[in-house]
Length: 314
Image (cartoon, rainbow, N blue to C red; front, side, top):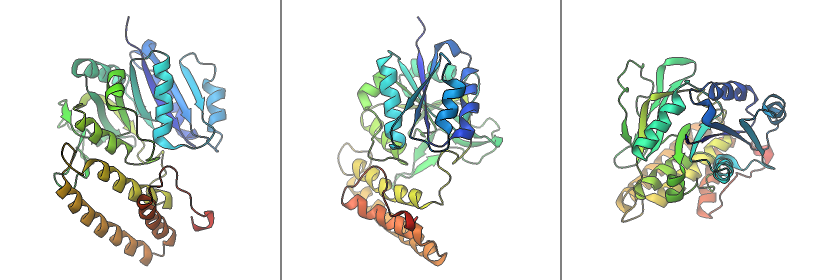
């Protein structure tokens, strides 16, 4: 019997993206092995109703409607838990602002079977399909900042060789049941941003490899699902979660980074955040400044999950 795969899509106000994404998945070469699990994070744009109307009766599409916006990590985890209960062996976490090549899932599953690793595809810009957004990834040696391999390079075959990498971008990640049981689920403290960085670091610490599958191609509407980075909420999550992620995995023996590297990171982090505070202050973006400071404060008091700020300040 061929192994089944659940493709998990997290939807939050993604009405304009969902249909194209789902249609591309259903156009897969191994369509008969696929179940799509759409996890809706209490959308307010009518996308849940649209999903139910268009796909609610489709035998391969299951819609999980959450009662609140719980963030990227928890929504994906709910999808994984549901898929595991159905006996599915593979789980593709896929952004709903993507469209995939017909053989992308087949190629990723083949890599997963052969290597036993977490698998990531080649990701191209959806509006420039000859330009690479991410062909696997790695981390800078000292500060452990993520690096997208091939970022903004014209795709002329220079990343057509598959192989191990260190960073699995959350846009598209293939996990097996064995990997989930060994590495765990996504950390729900993050809500949004850095959950994929943390998972990649945790996988390394648990001696689980990440494998870049060059033959699998995904086209991504970059920042489509988050609305871009010029929002106070994003400044908050990046600030708080960057600190949380590196504090978890750069603190000692057996960690992804050493204690000395963590102190260098802290110095860099402070300089970086102060620079952005100054830039936003001079630009008159007071809400961005407040969000950044709140992110630092909430890290110190260990306040995780969704950001809560006075609406007038956003």
